[in-house]
Image 1 (cartoon, rainbow, N blue to C red):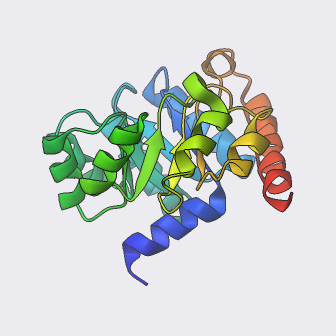
Image 2 (image 1 turned 45 degrees about the vertical axis):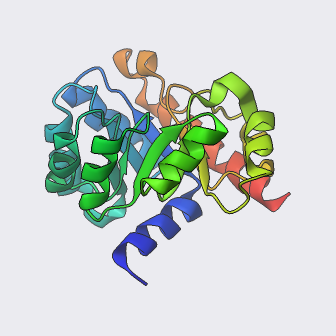
Image 3 (image 1 turned 90 degrees about the vertical axis):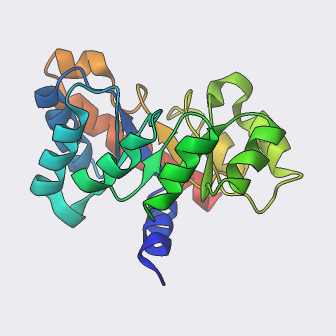
Length: 216
């Protein structure tokens, strides 16, 4: 099994990537610590996070292989190699665009490109997306993704945006490879209020819900 295949398998096993748009470097690091304490170890730091590359370097140094660390919201081609150099083992974009896709696949890392329509899903796959990020997931919900899986049963899909503890069952029933969860899993307001223990509790509840969804 290649390193890329191992990472993809681990994402699938974990079931969830915590998508973090932290308010600051310091608070983002504390948010990740709270998530890890709750058992959520798939971490995606977005490029919209302040000092995002520095955050990833710090997390890589602190947690190493204890977490599965990647970067998201890639919009520029040069961000792909920068993410890899900082310590990312997977990269995610909110959309599918030819130059960006080429830069992302050139890293050799697992790639997840954003798509919503059937045409975009197939374009993402054609340009090398290992898993297609269905974004924003909130627009159509699990029912919409289930419809996409009809003609594309073999395309691994990861809904992101609108994924919550309450609707996890629907996403996995619809055939999600994994889910990306942001504000519902790690609310920024809790971090700003210093309530990191509550983030840990939410993380624990998320994992319980995933386990229940997958066993049904």
